[in-house]
Image 1 (cartoon, rainbow, N blue to C red):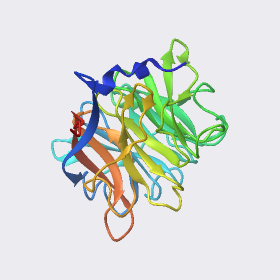
Image 2: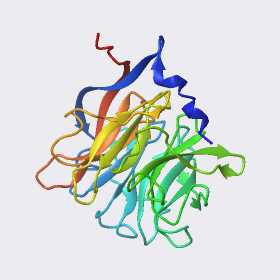
Image 3: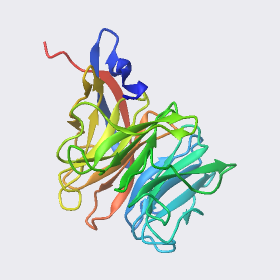
Image 4: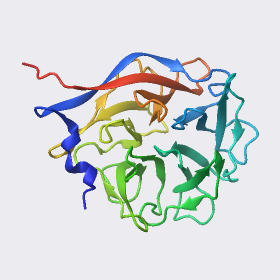
Length: 293
């Protein structure tokens, strides 16, 4: 069943004009020397109050495993040195995402007890403290790998990618609707957005339907770039590459909506000579496409 968000009404401006994403200004490094340090830092998510930042690192020392999620708290003196979160495991823990109300963090892990490879989990947040991680179960997770969970602004839909069988390519984009018991069975985003390449690391924007996502034919060998797509009458379009303010001649991925200011987008990119991924913020707006007449 197609999720209700894909009634597609929000994909058009008044008068039926399709919407597009416009990038405003230049990318700003996030907390240089603290978050964007001498390590690969990926997929920054900010709490709604703007006081907590989560991301994951593949190599920062001091964590529980090779991939770990880190947190930095913002005080009057600015962002503080990060520490590993309490729900890390000895395995791979990555792709954190705050919910819009800040009460839940979704993330991925290959820890024991899952459905297969990398599964999606959720952990409650109470007064800034994290509870126990819970696997989202077989309606969302598969024997394959699930990446990059992103809850919609209204909290009713979860967007993520999976390489489960039967798709258009490697990783495809999926959504799952909230239900009383957790989540209904996930389904692929309709339309042309899923291709023979890998589509992953997707985020909703503030309208709850337009998305930013990463694409690469082989994300272990090829350059990864960020695209935007919006739903139309027949599903999501194939996607439009974001401009050079976001994409350059190296990898860009891990986009997330900034819950503390929904006019901002966060993402990860290689911009320096060391080849490490750093964290950035950039402003965007959603505008009507020109008619071309």
